[in-house]
Length: 300
Image (cartoon, rainbow, N blue to C red; front, side, top):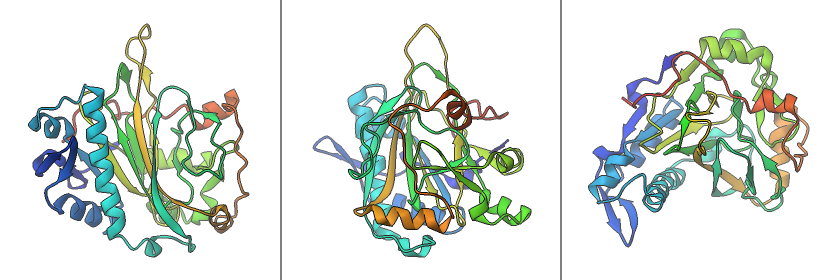
């Protein structure tokens, strides 16, 4: 599996920041400029790392949960600023009335509840984070903030150039995905996923034990990139494991907007269940992949 090229990686610690009333703020717009250039200018992805050094410069420690929260808020503020600079309508196949960016914190290893930020979706379902090759539904750009992990091996983010696959294999984007039976997301069909992982996948080689990392992605099935993850396992099975993820996505007030997106891809409107899926669905959508070269390391 390929490693994400250096030109898509941003060392946040190389940019000035200021600590104001316990919050980190950017000193200028250089970081946001880079996000816009990389994500909307053809690459479709940008990876921010180096928050351990950024925090240390301000006398903070990434292994202190309060300080890690400061770093997550800082990365989130960069994505929100990115959102103010992007004309979203240019990147959506159907017109959707996005009115906000919403965020939610989950554990990418253990089970979660109260995931969705949209009150007209179900808010009580118990679920596991998706690790197969997939797209998040009806949100053109996403940001996932990872780390720092506790007692986790694996769980490395994987990016999949499905637009190149669709072009090379002559597969229409709407034929690429299937509805998950218990989720709002859509998975790349198994008949396509293996070849995509073999020929069009890239591991994001990052240190998730001692750093925070944000991946900003052009998420749309039409022309975007899918994402997945390698299998996370406890480094020491006898100790608790935690894999913090903050997910950020575009949202809208009316669920009819969601229906337009599914109709575009010839999919039924999902009816997510309130319980963790059965073993077959867990194996299909939540187990993760185990690629060579996605076993950790330090961002370069």
